[in-house]
Image 1 (cartoon, rainbow, N blue to C red):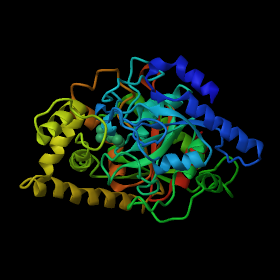
Image 2: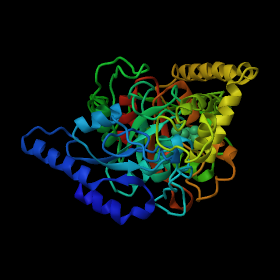
Image 3: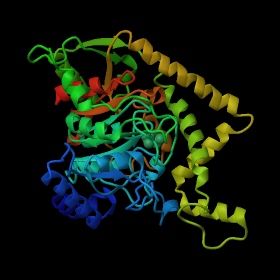
Image 4: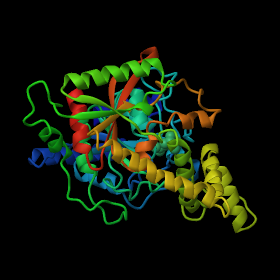
Amino acid sequence: TQAALDRIAAHEKLGAFLHVDADVALARADAADALIAAGNACPLTGVPIAHKDIYVTADMPTTAGSKILAGYRSPFDATVVARLNAAGTVSVGKLNCDEFAMGSANENSAFGPAHNPWDVSRVPGGSSGGSAVAVAARLVPGTTGTDTGGSIRQPASFTGITGIKPTYGVCSRYGMIAFASSLDQAGPMARSAEDCALLLSAMSGFDERDATSVQQPPQDFHAQMLAAREGAAAGKPLAGLRIGLPKEFFPAGLSGDVNAAVRAGLAELEKLGATLVDVSLPRTELAIPVYYIIAPAEASSNLSRFDGVKFGHRAAQYDDLLDMYKKTRAEGFGPEVKRRIMIGSYVLSHGYYDAYYLQAQKLRRMIADDFQQCFTQCDLIAGPVAPTVAWKHGEGKDNPTQAYLADIFTLPGSLAGLPGMSVPVGAGEGGMPVGLQLIGNYFKEGQLLHTAHALQ
Ligand code: GLN
């Protein structure tokens, strides 16, 4: 823990952390030492980690990357945080992220950007940018992220680390500040599939405080990952595994360097015994408008709670209650959050609901059905995480539509609620990391982790 704290201080300029608390961390480390001395350690006891600042924590502030939560302190821990505490991890601080997890570059954080440690003139991806930077720069071995439309997978890909978004409902959303509730999912980010498996086992499990939490017994993803290999011929841990390549995931617009790195990763999977099969996800492009209707719609409702009455910031001067709401929200929210609230309010409004929101919901179901059609022909789906490597700071800032289009490969799986992960497979332009995306069927996290582990 002390080594992590020293390294965090030495690399402060990366902008990975919004808050570090050495006293809290060292007290936790002492408690972990006592457990180890007493012979009561779990695999994660004493391991320094940090949480995306979208998870509420009782012993540290929580901002969700927004000025509107300045000064806010939660009276309780998010379930994911509480479970990782119980597993003995030592949380050292809170990680930078896009405001309310809206973004793909960590440039929408009210507290400044985070920088990609491979090239600090480039973005680390987002919205879990700080979580990715902290692992990639070896500040801590593992972090938590959240993924609504790609926010674990894309920054993992951009920084050369491993991240998994489990099936919707596997991790509790209790205490994870809501962006789009029907899509939000927690997950770990770490150096390897093995580390992700250990963290995910600790984080996940049924929680009666989250109405969409899946009622299943606690899972040992690490054991599942290793068991998947049992009986496999030497050197062929993936024998019999059919990996589907949707043709829509390899369009003409896919950058050549990303294509080459992904193809090299796929060739490795073949060497390990997997068979590659051609499949199709015909509504891949539609995932973008569908997601950018549904996610803002849910966000416009979720973010109505930030009104200056209950949490964080309140405007200093106002005439009446309505004026207080208006001024607080005008001052507290950044431009991307305001844009989403406007879009969401518009698509939910009378007269437009049927034309936009309802159509999007219907297409969402069809996108999920397309995946089930694919899974009759293959066990896993593979492709790129993003169409390019990490871009330079400032490049996506003035053109939100351009940034939305870059989410094309992560959005379909999110809309379907499927588990997905990013595994580093090589480097592209400027030596920047490229991740391979693996998407599994519902509750196939063990199979995803096993496949990624074989590759690593
Ligand atoms: N980039 C997407 C967005 O801006 C996804 C974000 C996320 O997964 N939290 O909404």
